Image: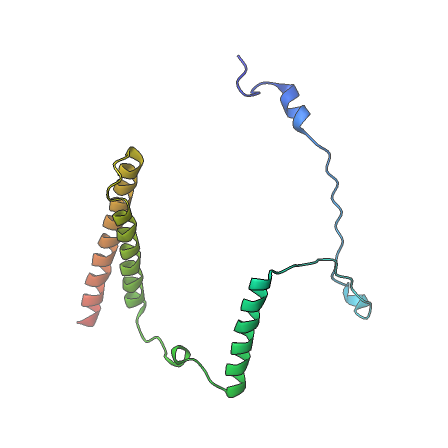
Length: 141
């Protein structure tokens, strides 16, 4: 019995193709730094992306010219690693809960399985969160 070409030597040899690969270095060797290196890559960008990039660059340049920094850059994050992990876990739990709410009303087997997976993930994250909260409480004593 031959299933999908298993144990067939011809199926392997028929699917082989000859491939020719040519590599050309665009980096000049150290001894020939004065020679010109030719670049052959071309990149195109859509008009929308070009406008967005232009506006982002111009706003960054204006801010740098004024010597201004964003208020967020001035603030130093003084939270401990545990506090950062706690906040991240809370955000992850909220995202999973939102995904679970989207499945309300869907009575398919796939949705039921997805709800079980989400419930399991939420339970695991809650357990981690409780553990970190206990550690945080102990370190504050």
